[in-house]
Amino acid sequence: MNYLPGFYTAESIPEAVKYEVLELLESGELFRYSSESESSVSRLEMEFAELMDMPFALAVSSCSSALFLSLKAIGLEPGSKVMIPAFTFSAVPSAVVHAGCVPVLVNVADNYRIEMEEFEQKLSEGIDAVIVSHMRGHISDMDAIVDLCEERGVPIIEDAAHALGATWSGRKIGTIGQVGCFSFQSYKLINAGEGGILVTRDVDIIARAVLMSGAYEHNWKKHPKINHRFTFWQNKLPLFNMRMSNLTAAVAGPQIREVSQRVKAGQANYDYVAKILNASDWLHVPSPLEKEVRAPDSIQFNLCGFDSDEDAKEFQRRAGGKGAEVQIFGLSEDNARAFWNWKFIHPQNDLSPTRNVLVRACDVRLPVNLSKKDLDLIASALVESVREVKEMSCPVDYAYGPEAQ
Image 1: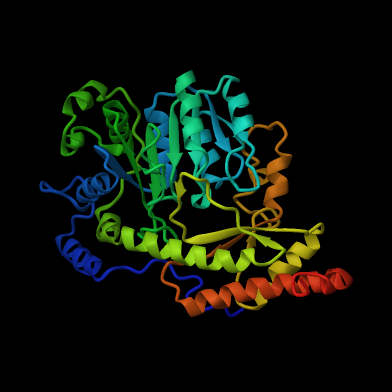
Image 2: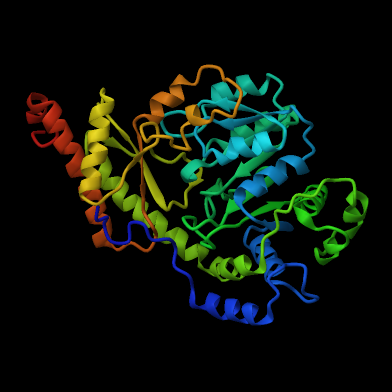
């Protein structure tokens, strides 16, 4: 199948990366703690912390590692209950399970954000921590979430893998909870192939996370500012080798300077395509919340008036035939974002509202480097495909549909 131009491209690697990588390879110092001077990883941590206006950052092997270390660093006991959205990537419940905790899923609404009435109810049922997944960059009501959690003394970890550059009421996503976790996987705003980073204001959280990430013996001395807390926690915590290599940091670091421009481009692409899709009676792109400013690199929309799974799959097939690959979260086999495929977690209470959303929720990549021509081709493929399916399944109704109005 021939996909549209640029459809699967990751974010481009700046020229500055090449020089840093070559210099690093010549030195041979790929391990972050082997150098006596400042390493590529430590520079990345300092620059990312500055970007986020946070005092502490720890670069690790992935966002999944960041989530796991965050759960361990906030001091959860085995068997603690951690509430997560029912719409997220399987790495989130996996991190909870790896941390020895129990995932408790909360439904999302048809705008992909946490259903707040149920969130409040479940929060009162012995929840020990909350991971707010800003899935695909959609931000839930963080004011309400923070108020409810602070009232009960429940810590918040933000899974901001898809939300670097997004804000809520002017505050940077990833800085609102106790810990914020980000991804540098290829299809994220910063493309290092793999890698992740966490940020926090809490000296004990960062000290515990640094030690557990694999700063064995006295390597923690190469993390400045809080040596007294490292001394306190030394040898009291297990080590998990989740460090980032200097090579990954050398690829990620120079891209920090690209974040602002990429966010603007992503917003423009998203708004342009959303307007075209929302002009169709059968496609709906949910609006952002009032206090939310997103940083998208993909677009999600709901199929409207599709009573049949087969019609939804036919839309998916036709769009793919026109070069625009569509993922329907709840109809793609073994999809890692469909909670019923997470066979490794405990049985949950009724999650049918989220299931009903996911079987009609579509996902299409919109890399920030796409041209207006590319965006027109993608939008046209989607609109034409949904029109063809509705014309095929409801020929009489179609005659009185949007073209006739």
